Amino acid sequence: MMRRWLFPIVAGGLVALGAYQATLLATPYALMYAALKKIGDRGPVNQFAFSPMTTADNQTIVRPSPDLAYAACVFDVSKGPVLVDVAPVAGHYWSVSIFDARTDVAAVRSDRDTKGAPARLALIKAGQTALQGYQPVMLQYDKGIALIRILLANPAEFPAIDAIRRKSTCKQVQTSN
Amino acid sequence: MKAWQRYAIFMVLGLVGGTAFAVQQVRGGLSDGVVPNGPWETGKSFGTLDASALTRAKVALSGLLALPAKEAMYFTATRDSDGRKLDGRCSYDVRGGTLDGRWWSITLYEGEGWLVKNAANRWSIPASAVSTDAQGRWYFTVSPDAQSGSWLPTGSVDAFDLTLRLYHPAADIIKNPEKAQLPIIDRKGCA
Image (cartoon, rainbow over all chains, first blue to last red; front, top):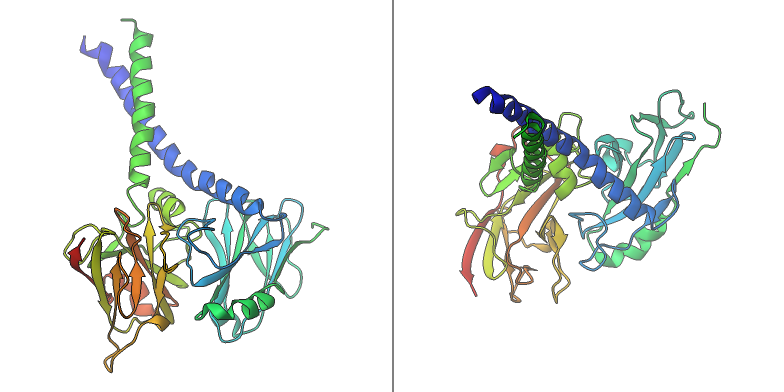
């Protein structure tokens, strides 16, 4: 009698463990996919979308900072490397971070790292090579998000900061290696 | 009951139960399973390959696109310094001193991490918005009603959390966030 129920119970337990782990593993991909779609709706792939300062009425991504000016590029390296050039903003904290499809940070460069110079990153996958003058960022997935953050101590600075950050570019190199 | 029916019942139960338990764990909040410091909690592995599957899923839900600790640390409080849940109908004093990093701000969120609508259109208190005394001490008020001095509105929501961002934190804080001197959150009263 016991054996009739024991094996189904054990099988159910194993399925529960598998379902638990699969849900945890799938969650970052699913939420990142949603973010890629949400940000991607605001502009083409491999191009920065420059957001206004975040308020309660225009939140795109969870837990935004209202003190930061954001610019986001949904990138796709499947057809070739993507070059990210970030214009420096003197006297302000700024950074560019590269998030892969699993939500891991593949690279971060801030004004502290570049000592005020522009950040120049080449997003590549296996089999591709970075262009000279660009720091290679090897990715495990084709898609992800490049995100620029710029700190504004005073919201009145936004128009001047916005003009500078729009010099930043995210673009695909047409000839893959 | 036939054997396949017994297997089917327990496998369906396992599938639903395992998935539901994972969702419950992920929705448990950004800070579960990480480093506590007074009312604040943080993690050392946000955004990194070292993050566990549970931490990665939690951060994706409540702090997607978070930076790794060397760039920024995120301390989140869902309770005051006496352990009571933060309530948007109550008023709090947030008092702190020098935070060892390049820049900090404290932002108020509801739910999974959304800014709260409020008449003042104010959602955070950055370091530049507080007055410090000779010892570097500062404070501001979190309240549903307008207050004199630095004030962060709650929008009278049922529950909220505060996230302290510390950009370019000092090496000591990255290594031992549980020993960092962080602000206290003192409840003054409720409407």
